[in-house]
Amino acid sequence: MPALRRVVVTGLGLVTPVGTGVKASWSRIIAGKSGLVSLSGLTHEPTGRTYEGIPSQVAALVQKGSAEGEFDISKWLSKGEERKTSPFMHYALSAAQQALEDAKWTPEDEEEKIKTGVCLGSGIGCLDEIQTTSELYEKHGMRKLSPYFVPKILINMAAGHVSMRYGFKGPNHAASTACTTGAHALGDAARFIMFGDADVMVAGGTEASVSPLAMAGFAKARSLSTKYNSTPEAASRPFDRDRDGFVIGEGAGCVVLEEYEHAKRRNASIYAELRGYGLSGDAHHPTAPPENGEGAARAMRRALEVAGVRPEEVGYVNAHATSTELGDLAETRAIKSVFSTSLNSLAISSTKGAVGHLLGAAGAVEAIYTILALHHNVLPPTLNLHSPGPEPEFDLDYVPLKARHLKESHRELFAAVTNSFGFGGTNASLVFTKV
Image (tube, rainbow, N blue to C red; front, side):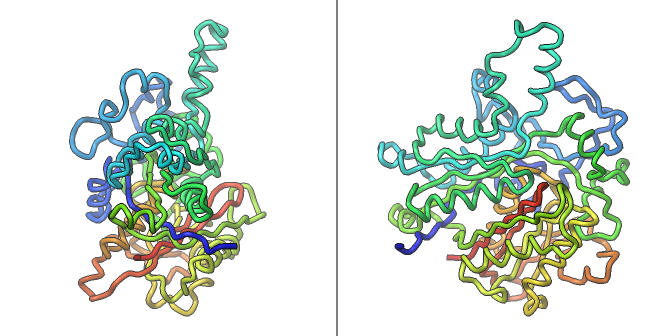
């Protein structure tokens, strides 16, 4: 079998609760800004319902508007496109356009379009459309149903619309693996390039599922934070002893992945190399990880093996850490088992303290933050981490509260890992390095 081809990152796009656009989102992450807000008194526009009676009243919402860093749908979609698509597709189209413009990839040649693909997923898609259409059907039968109902709820249609907008005829693929979706999408896309199915892939994850129904479902499963309804910015607190659940968020992240020689030939700017991709299954419980984090550890070890990177070469881990009691502890144990000989030189942080848990978009958004950490030599902080614990095992370097500029300590980041784990026991880790 011939050697696998190298994969590099040449474009980035973000829609997040702290900002739309890579510059806005990253600068606010590094500045320690929070995208968490109160839902108390708000009406959910698509359904006309409020969040009254739901124990958790906090979410991380994409800020809408025309100011810099806000999401203005008119910049990304026409009125006709908006009517035929769902919010998770809107975010995906925005992030994909940003990434393609950043990569300066606008193929006109038919062969180039055939060798350009899309791999873009979502965890939930559009519950709102299902709920409102179901209510409409109960009242009026099929007479008032939209002909776009089914296309608006299909997970793969985010990838489909990106493919159709730009005429990309390569692999058209969609992952949907709960909160691991974004990481799986990037890893799968990288493999398409490694094996020659494509030269360029637009890859990422997207989610727009903050709604009373989704909130009620997660609350019933006791997954959401409920202690901080009056202080929403404090609600997502990875690794902190006072954490009590995750904060649901929305947004999208897209990257342009490219075969290394292809990128060099067109003189593309390169952010990082995607060197390793590891997957595993817990085979343990529908929603909880095993206490020892064994599945997470296997995903990290496999990613490092594929990358040909030694644990001691990794300087940073962007943790999945959602701010849940069991998950944060299991991941800490997994990291300790994988990096046992180099923990003194390893930094770990979770950007979910700032943007909450973006579900199917989380892996892609956090991969982009990891890429930017490598590119700028800056580690994003873990917000709201005042006292790790309560177990004594929480003794790692979690970059609490404030970003760390490595140049100030004359350190250079070479390799970084980002983790994503999801319901059903699905795990993925990605290894990025400087080129």
